[in-house]
Structure formats: C-alpha cells, structure tokens
Image 1 (cartoon, rainbow, N blue to C red):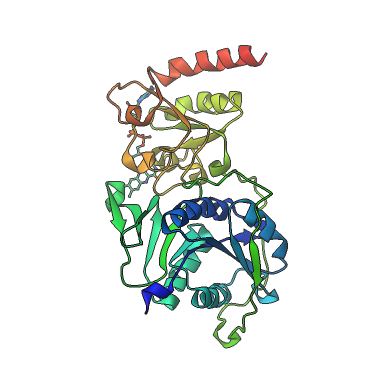
Image 2 (tube, helix red, strand yellow):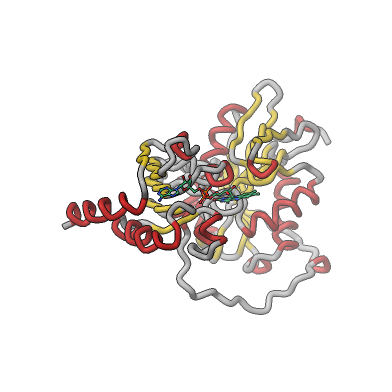
Length: 333
Ligand SMILES: Cc1cc2nc3c(=O)[nH]c(=O)nc-3n(C[C@H](O)[C@H](O)[C@H](O)COP(=O)(O)OP(=O)(O)OC[C@H]3O[C@@H](n4cnc5c(N)ncnc54)[C@H](O)[C@@H]3O)c2cc1C
C-alpha cells in the first residue's frame, strides 16, 4: 500500500428512507476541521436508491464533493451490498481518512468495510485530531469501562477509519450557497456474495423518543428514587423536555433503556441537562459532558457531577423539585 496516494477526508452520509441521518452531517462538520489541518477537501459518500436529491443538503453542510451510488439493490440496507458499494468508492478515490456514524447501521457496516479494505477501525470515538507532522489521525475513545481514554493511530494502512456516535461532533451552520461537485458511480455488484434476502419491513409503531435530539433533558439517578419519579416526570414536562436517566434507574425499571445516557446508553448534547440525584460516574458523564448547560442537584457536595456542572444545587431533589415546578408554572402562566 502506497500511503502517499491516499488524500482527503471521506464521510459515509447515512440515509434512511431518503432522509439523511444527523450524524453524517455532524461528521462532515468534523471532517471539515480535520481537512483544514491536512489542506484537503471533504467528500461525502451517499449510498441508496432514489437518493440523488440529498446531495444538495450534504453540500450545504460542508461537503466539497458528493459521490453517489444510486441503485435499486441498495434500497434496503444490506451489509454485503453496502460494503461492495462503499469499498469500490474508497478503492477508487483513496481517502486518507474515512468516518462513519456509530449508528446501528454504521456499527454493522464499518467493521465489514475495514476488513474488506484491510485497514484498522477505531470504534466509538469521542474526539478526533490530526498530527500535522505525520498526517496521522488521532482517534480518542473511552476504554476499560470508561475509566481511561485511549488515543489510537493507524500508521501503516489507509484509509484511517473511525466511527463516532451521533451527537458527539458539531455540524457546520447550514449554508445553502455552498456547492459540491456531484459524481455518480455505477457499481457492478457481485450478487453471488449476497447472503441476505429482504422480505419485509416491520415498523415499530410505539412512540419512540430520541433523547439525542432533545433540547432539554431532565435526567434522574438513584438519588431520585421510585418515590421521586412523578416529580422528575413533572419537571421534564414543565420544561417541555424529555426524561432521561442513569443506568441505575434503567436497571431498576424506572426509565426505559432507550433513555439511558452514557457509555452503554446514548450520547446527548442538549441545550439544558438537569442531572438530579446523579453521582456523576465517568460512564454517565461521557454521555452528557458536552451539554450546553448542566444543572446538577445532589445532596452530596462532593459528588463528581458537580465537576462537570455549570450550576450546582446542593439539596434534596424531593424538596427542590416542587419549588422548581411551581416557579416554572408561575412563569409560564
Ligand atoms: C461498563 C460499564 C458501563 C456503564 N454504562 C453506564 C451508562 O451508560 N450510563 C450510566 O448512567 N451508568 C453506566 N454505568 C454505571 C455507572 O458506573 C454508575 O454506577 C451509574 O451511573 C450510577 O448511577 P447514579 O448516579 O444514578 O447512582 P449513584 O452512583 O448511586 O448516585 C446517586 C446520587 O444521588 C445522590 N442523592 C441521593 N439522594 C438524593 C436526593 N434525595 N436528592 C439529590 N441527590 C441525592 C447521591 O449523593 C449520589 O451522588 C456503567 C458501568 C459500567 C461498569
């Protein structure tokens, strides 16, 4: 492998049913920052069926070039079909960095791609940076149960691949005057390698809240306790926010697992994060430390959550919450 042949930063722009996933746009933002250090450009790869119109949106979020593989074979996600399409694009355009969102789809696709491309993959990164002297990508991710942060490099193979969870990186501001070069690629698929046949799609119709999209999150921990749950829910409603929680509350069945914040839950970045009765274990903090404003309520003034909070209230949640709810009601009235 001649490493010098590989140039630029490429992002997998995931779409589902013709709608771009936010993580792809976030990664284009991060790719722009990395590409500036390398003095290179950002390419988005868009794979699917009838998806060409999405190129404009990718450009407006900072992609300099969009490579589209539009084929009926790609109308539903299939690991092998997607792998063949993206591998062909990477082998042709040879990016030095390739970024994927660590979504359910991305977590399935990225390892297959790295195997096919014979390169390394650093999964679930929380920070990316460039060593300008060597042009190496430094990918940082939590390890050993979140107690350490490891920075991983891939010196001998290209592209350097990393996956990043949704909500970790920041999008560029949308600018509809930005334009991208749009290239369409035709892929000859080896259908003999397809192992999965699409039969039907069953949509889960239960009301699903995505806490990664919420502007206001009211998160509870063990300190809230069962008796404090109605107060926590009431506070979330008063703030027009969503309920979230630590793993402790999820394990006790008081909060749905889809609302768990942290290393084994979701990474969130709301405008306001209220951490009620949460100690601030590293595995929790990893998922919420990038919130715009964090207010912590805890009876223990030494609780680690106060180290990441912008505002700390040393008090009993059961006493503070009714006052807050009453005050919010008055303001809204
Ligand atoms: C591999 C691994 C992955 C993990 N992943 C996650 C994850 O994704 N998300 C996650 O959250 N955790 C995760 N954990 C668990 C994590 O280590 C902590 O155990 C957990 O976050 C603690 O939850 P907590 O803050 O609710 O409870 P505790 O640590 O028990 O804290 C309760 C806090 O409430 C305060 N308190 C008590 N009463 C009151 C009151 N009346 N009013 C106000 N404050 C009060 C206490 O002072 C205390 O600080 C993981 C652990 C491991 C090993």
